[in-house]
Image 1 (spheres, rainbow, N blue to C red):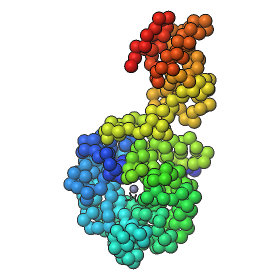
Image 2 (cartoon, rainbow, N blue to C red; image 1 turned 30 degrees about the vertical axis):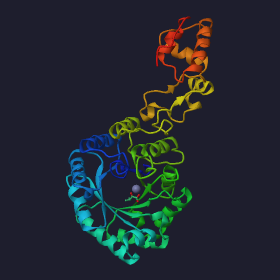
Image 3 (cartoon, rainbow, N blue to C red; image 1 turned 120 degrees about the vertical axis):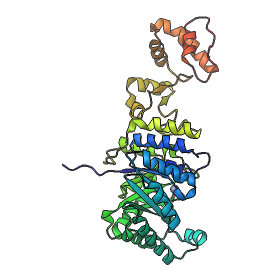
Image 4 (tube, rainbow, N blue to C red; image 1 turned 90 degrees about the horizontal axis):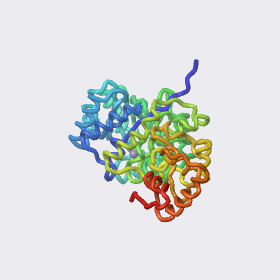
Length: 390
Ligand code: KIV
Ligand code: ZN
């Protein structure tokens, strides 16, 4: 019996996410988040950048000691001290990985690293070889891959594969690429890199032009089998591809993406909520999948449809991603059907004749007040009602 190919979820909330402004977490917070990411079912958990600080190294080490399920990894530049720090940090984890990266674009090589292409090739190969001394699972990232000369990128990645890299990541470091370009890049790398069929290719998309998730999905169409992403899409600048959006897209559009993965969909919302609590900021209300309004329907037409059959305006159920239940917001656009249903749920089934005056009072109140709460509804049942909630 043949099974569908698997998409590996690589979560970098605690590394690329945590390094963005306002998203820093303390040791215990990182551990709590790491346990939740394990419950969510991520396959690879990038727990930090060990060389960045002693605190980072200790947090990664604690996660490697305590958290079971995901493969634990640390980022490392192509430097001996980085690789050794990463090795020390991930060592307690039975499943581990070292994630080595070096830029491949001329812009980064010249302006930032002052390296020639040939020097970069040599550094990449030597660093992967060194990392192999500490783990048999090595990921190599060609930073700024999408703005690199593709001919050089083939040579660069080939050198990393020959040196022993088992996963090759082609990051869209500055969120510059488009879905068609990104898909073509993966197709070309798989065609031209010797031994590509033994390698897992990975996406890593930033959201500077709002295309991080679309680009990740295009990467999958091009043959990538690992996606790097963060909870709530936190990350450098405009953020990284949001894990919950990729997972929901794969689940909802299995017709287009016939792949398996290990994400426990009902843990998406609780994970998003925990992160928001730990970093003290949540996502915007209109954020897909986990935003407060992601399943809220205010207009009467939409509410009527959802009550008749949720599929009219919902492509996935709130329960399927761990959101308690559909949130039909009572406001000035709501119809009498929703009002009648909510009052019934509150223990007040009304006949049509009883509902009419209550509905009239409801619309008058909704004109003055943005959101109508259950206490307001109970107040509306009395002819001389006054608004109770703030
Ligand atoms: O965006 C990027 O290129 C990265 C790499 C270090 C993987 O985060
Ligand atoms: Zn990144």
